[in-house]
Length: 337
Ligand SMILES: [Zn+2]
Image (cartoon, rainbow, N blue to C red; front, top):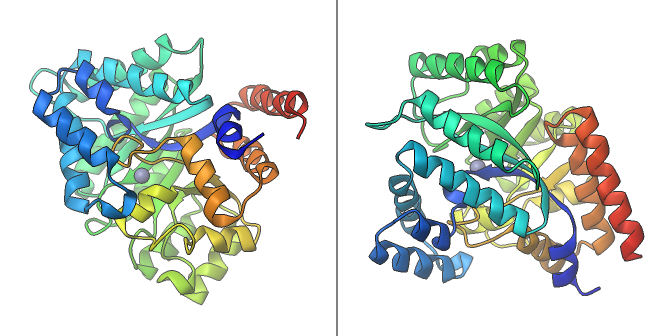
């Protein structure tokens, strides 16, 4: 089977996708985004990863953010994003988003609208929700958000599975007590880690031992990290959520060939391939897998194995993991590779 077809047809696992950044231009159109903004969004999507500036990416996030500002649009946006992943043969999806309030929508409304859309899609694809703590918020606001997240998790324990730490890596800092509270209340934790050089914070995050980390760009000494934190990372066995195109667009990786994922491949460390913000970065999971074959010399067998192993890194129940493993094994058997 040729690579494009293989990547498209493989039943896939997506573990790092932000709701707003995952909206396609077609979805924004359905959400009544202004026609001139749709044209601009589509034009930016069509640019090559290296042609896009960070400012242009931020303007795309803003367009999506502005189009999703009431209960109905949050519900629809979530449905459209889930449908896109389903159409790309993603069988298990973890969506993440920061609870927000608007004039006619509380944070509880926001979360419930996302949850409702997930519940309405559950026949076709398994979806879990991770709620994010934004780095921009001070400790008091973050504590309030964590309390809300824990309350909502207790109401929807089969859907809300984890908590994420995200936002601009240039502001805010990691607070281990805050995330310990999440763990004590039965939530799993994934943290954006090492997007910029910050040895002290990376060390703190690794010592905290989250269930997964996102990006992990500046951990290895060749990529802005240090021997000490790389050695520490290697002893933890924490799976990395790797987002190739996102890193290239944002300039945290120079290109696909020299991406820091090479160190994970070379050292047989655990990782999963993800999209981050497929709308803004103009990608999808099939494409990310294809890029890993093209630029990092992974084989079809490697992609199957990475996907299969990713099941163990999900925040799904053991029963759901067993079902997902069966889907992957059966697909391998029927596709004879
Ligand atoms: Zn992210």
